[in-house]
Length: 161
Image (cartoon, rainbow, N blue to C red; front, side, top):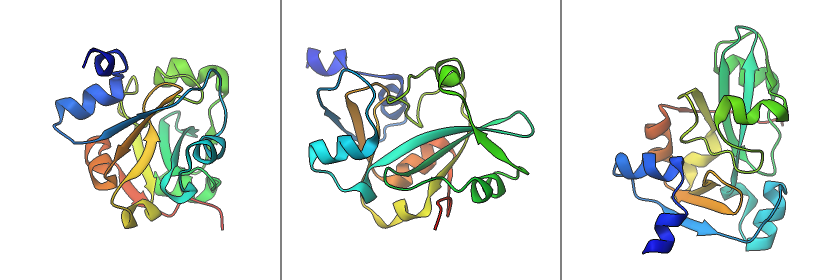
């Protein structure tokens, strides 16, 4: 059990606190690689493996978008989904100061603040999806409805066609 305790992240502690069941998957990885590389390495489906992107709106507010690793965020749809005129990706150098996480280990759970979160609507059709566990080499496997609940998020179509 001590080993499990060693890998607990803020994201996992939030799920524990909210009594939400999840599974943890760990893998060897020393540096950032994209989500498709990880899915390939672990034999996971792209459609069930989700990445977390953080944007900043014209208003100065930050927003979190969760989408399949093989998809691209449609900036216009993303902005519309959060009531902004436009949004832009935050700079890599700002990921830690905004979220508390590093590139490649950014979970939609356990950020410094609870930002408005939008999850791609395709997540609804899966019993479980895979998200970052909050550090490189760690994944959380979770029911997408539980993720919406704990992030106070919503489902929307936010990917490019």
